[in-house]
Image (cartoon, rainbow, N blue to C red; front, side, top):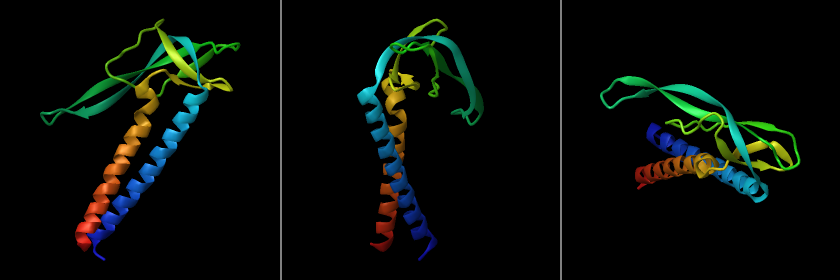
Length: 146
């Protein structure tokens, strides 16, 4: 076996792992959506993170990404603070801004913004990368033996 075929098989194996993880994330999201309740919260803080990005001219620049911290009151419960872990650019949030939250009624700490991007970004991205990796590795292996 040559190095190339080992890389192809490893790449296809990585793809299979990513596809399994993507499926797991999708199942978890579907299960959350079945029981999730809605609440309107208020943005109390805006978190920031900076990332260095390459420019088209070969240089780099720092870009700031934003995520809200939201307080909401679940039905019949005490106020809960939710720290969103999906950062966006440009900033879409303002302190005091009302925002829709989906939460698990059995555990209100398990919450997320009511946003398709927040709900499905990770499962879809992981599944896409898994598909690309699996197909690329498989085609490479078939090409090697074919």
